[in-house]
Image (cartoon, rainbow, N blue to C red; front, side, top):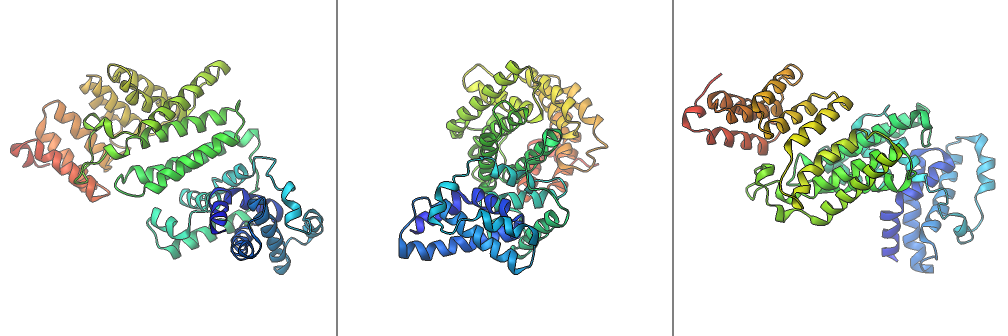
Length: 420
């Protein structure tokens, strides 16, 4: 009985909430109603047994509870007669009507939660809460805030959706590309939370991958938006596959070329490459240019493919980064392109690229760290030490600060005492 309730709460929660929101058009009421329905299921199913379709039972009870709450708040009066007509009198009799035949209810939920009018943090938290039923306590841990602060963040996000009149629907074709970009931004941001801290917060990475899968499954196969989500899914899988190899036993970051590939999760590598290659073939067949996520995944794949070939083609990676620069003007893309150019043997050219974004990334630890590495390769050790020390001063975590200071120590005693 408890297992059946837990199954609905974990695997069907997003569908149930989406269905109830579609009925009453109120985000907060729908979530409250679903939580109430799950609580009732624990009691009723213990007495009466688990119904034939547990998710349908919970959905019907939640819909009824939501309508009661709407009546109680004297809201949406004009819709009440329609709602009364649509809800059938017996929960068990409604099972056949609640198979989620439209298949896009969770997609509506995701695209509404990820509306650009909300802050990135609010979009991410609301998406996890409503689609995957991540608890407020777990969300607070993921985003490094108190549970009370997270609860307030969710309340504000729901209120903004309601009062700003943000429509609960999948956007039309004219808005789809921009809104898909917002969803990808949220999922990528969630993953970055974990990627920046490989010693913890694994749940953020796993939830981002789960949500990317949902989007891929729900979007039409022939849509360009699905290609982008498949690119994102491939990217996340390929990056996540290396998680165990990215940190040493003492918590230090391990450079890619020094990572133990035996620690990579080969199932994730294989799936990531399959998803990417399938998407690229479909894009080529449809004569559709790949978007930002698909290009980013293509870059990640180049680092992984040497498992089946002779080595990493850094020149090819640099060329793909140049394509990405045309799609994404971020200075961080240029920074990564510079690393690829240096790895291809053109360190002076790479240093020139890094210097073109010095103003845009002034004071950022990654800019100083990359510049320090390039100077080290050019045997300009005293200058390299200055940059690594600047990176350590600006580092956002102790782990990264210690990594940069260890690079200073490796340069030798003379360089270690260099000053600006």
